[in-house]
Image (cartoon, rainbow, N blue to C red; front, side, top):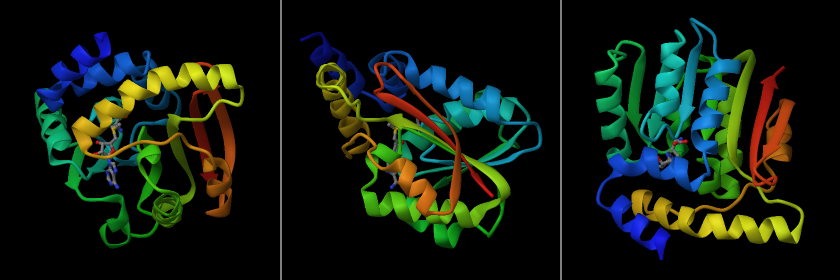
Length: 219
Ligand SMILES: C[S@@+](CC[C@H](N)C(=O)[O-])C[C@H]1O[C@@H](n2cnc3c(N)ncnc32)[C@H](O)[C@@H]1O
């Protein structure tokens, strides 16, 4: 009942997304963004964010001195991102594009970025889209560059999977309300990264193994 009421509040505006996603991800959403910006982004990096949503991670990276290009298919999410970026005077450090991931081949030059990042987006893509996006990420990343992906993963044990389901149901609803898409936990991301040519250099699971961070290098 509580999550139903909460959903109704969230439905009223994408502006509620930031608060909503952090509560529904039990704090993982903000925590992982701070971790990515803090550990992997350096001053002067050219960074691409796939599915930047309301711009939280792009802003953290720009505040660290990176030049960020973020794209998202949702104009509503981008409108919030634009407002936040303007409020923080980061317009000259963050460029936003409204486009789908499937358009990456036309949008970006070869080896244009030092880092590519994406949080809570791959779980909204079908396997074929994930493979395509990773292939494009490999093309647009500089040699030695990093791709950093954080998303929901599938725990091995039944108990953990049941607990995860209790959290996932409201999360799936909120995602659908805000983006008209649904999510599924990542199953093969590590092998997809390897197949695309990346070397996975760091992997971390948290929250009962239901949330994963993957860092891979184009080597
Ligand atoms: C759950 S939100 C995550 C947003 C942000 N990355 C974050 O961590 O808060 C998923 C985002 O992915 C975007 N998205 C989903 N499918 C996409 C696609 N095919 N191309 C571009 N963006 C997509 C949605 O519009 C939405 O903003």
